[in-house]
Image (cartoon, rainbow, N blue to C red; front, side, top):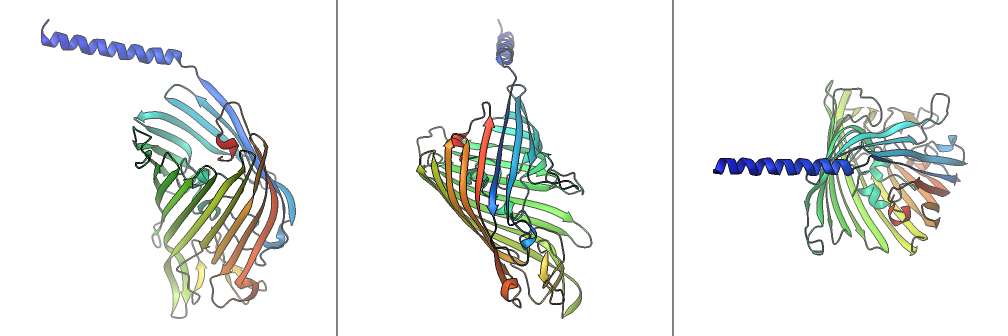
Length: 426
């Protein structure tokens, strides 16, 4: 047999063997699905409300004295279904009720996630298309799952609406590098990544031509006890009369000592030409960039293993580093209220958006009691303080707060979905 015939025989035999193995794997594969869900809510009592009704964005209990001072509420209810189509393809869908109401004031449900996943499109990487979790805080190895107490409160970027938790688009995510010898604690266990191109409309229909670009990179080391991560995004939202572009950078660290977990994250979001204002030196409209910053630190720990834990968190949020008390703002990427002595309330609404011209300090602390797996009862306190950025303000307009003691309940239900740490990491 000459060389060409030998090579041809080897190639044909190899292809036949590979085809047979794939056919055998597909023959062994059985499509399967899993119905799952979870619910969390509270009984809360609000003895003190911010007199101006500040908050904005996704801040709970905003609105001053216009809301009931005590109530039972469900803040989130998820119903999801995961379906393995083949060994390579799977589909995911989640219906959510997150205090959304229709025109009649009734609770409504919407599609929070709905996407197709192509596993191992190439080694250690997956391709997702559809309504996907964004890598700003909600995805694996990011601050929300690392913090583990979404039932208590959103992470700082989510709380101030600096990005949505889901978006319609396409994502590539996976591990860029993985250690072969996981016992070597001086080297990273793995380096992961997540990139997403989306509409930047969350679960709503697209309304403009622009797309938002997001990306995160994270490192897990010390046998996955220490996680370090960075995130960045870019979004153009307007071309005329001026360009408006928003960029975000974020860094975070999380250490899990098994008994105690501690973490910190910092972000800055800049919106070019986000502010529109006039002042005494220029009566025509002027544009300036807004700059929001936030620092969040948290700690959680076990008191009785898988029965009783504690948690505490503090956020420091700056509504606009570039705010100037000498300006009269007519619109802002972040501001919704500015001082107005001519108005009986002392403020006027100028723009519907994510936050106010205030610095905010948020505090939360409580206990997590789990009488049985996947059921949690969590007495806790919720406190948010507002400090107006305008130097000419005083009294309660200058500084006030919302204070809410509450009892939070949280339960998970599913058939086979894995829940780590008795659900405390979910």
